[in-house]
Amino acid sequence: MRVLLAGYNVDAEVIAEAVSRGLDPDRLTPEILSAAYARISRNPAPVDELRAQARAEVAKARASNEQIVFGLGHASVAEHAVFNFDLMGVSRLAIEAIEAFRLCSYTEKSQRYIRLDDDLVMPEELRALGLEERFRELTAYQHRSYDLLYERLREHVFEKHAALAAEKANRRTLEGWAKEDARYATSLAVEGQLGLTANARTLEHAIRRLAGHPLAEVRAVGAELARLARAVAPSLIRYTEPTAAANARSPELCRLATELLGPDEGQTLPGAAGSVQLVAAPKGGDQTVAAALLHGASSAPWDSCEEQVRALGAADLRAIFDAALAPLGPHDAPPRAFELVALRFDLVISASCFAQLKRHRMATLLCQPYDPNLGFTIPPAISEVGMAGELEGVAQASARLHDAIAERSRAAAPYALTQAHRRRVLVELSARELYHLARLRLDRHAQWEIRGIAERMVGLARQVLPETLALACGKDAFAETRARRFASP
Image (cartoon, rainbow, N blue to C red; front, side, top):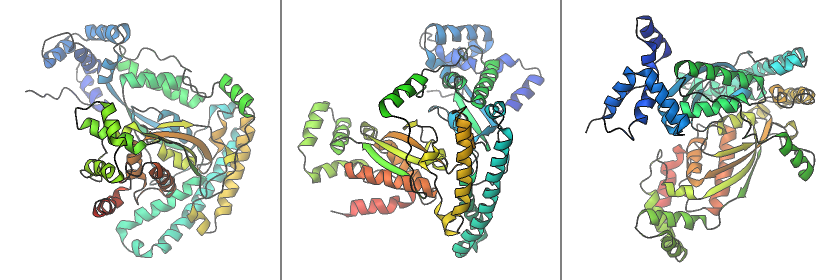
């Protein structure tokens, strides 16, 4: 056996240094790996020799990529080329569109841990509408409230947790609690930054989707991604024209929705929390998962496994799940059999909470636009320090400008809103993915709002899948939950 390291991501400055010293830049293109691996299926030569051939004949490798990826339609070959991008100075609203692709990887500047300044993106749409001055006045108000809330919350947190504050190592955590609540007053136009990693196939798909986005800022990001990737891998990034095929809010769909459902009326919710509804769940889901577990552990056909499980009593059903769950540790995913049952939730959550939920990209997230009629979320700590009125004032002023912008540009209107404002999200995820959400979002280190949302999701789901979700909990509670499960008769 031979295992070779064929390549890895290299910082662009290192590549530039190599080129400046005389290395042919064509030898550094990721197209070489795609072309070499494309030949594996039809060429008996060892893979390292195929790579050597591709390195020696880059023009030929590019032609081969174009024929195989676009001519023959074997797009998976493009997945062997990987790109990294630094994205800076993009708005919190635009980041939602950028991070909507399941197979990319993202690491984003956290507004929970970093104190925000007053840098913001000025949307082209607002300049064109003559609303730049009003927008700057609003965002200045939002940021003043952020500073005011942060200072008051910081003082409150340190007083409330004086024992923790006595140890220097805990102070950054306590400051983070103040920051994560103060950010509810900040604008969706506030600047952020992120690192993005994508293979060429996924990147081309993302570029096309971004190119058709209604916001000019998002379209500009897509254009830059296309320009930069094409410069080093022209044979893999070809189709970059906009696509509107996946637009869930096409004008015709919106017209039909209004015709069938009536005009939007909104639904104002209490200030402190959103809404969680379990709107679809499988009947007999525990039995489905148990049958799949037996199917994977035997040579029996599915019908036999399902029939056997339907005849079992509660004790025998539990025994199957005990056998599957017993090997799990706090960082282990349950078996893939848990993917055979799905749960659907209708959520109303703040922008701050959605920023965390969107990271669960293996779930299906269908989002409505931000809607001031749904109200806004007030962190309990802000109420505790008597500052709820401050956040209410900011939210109401933001909603007024949102409505003024929406009269002429519905797509750009959310730039005016705060991270306290809400949207409705339809979420469907398998029981296996719900375990992942629970491990991360029910942990004591999780932010309070998404922890509350996750608690309600898991609680509702456990009512219909008690055995399947027996160990769905936060990492910090795993040992206790596991001991309780296996200690009971």
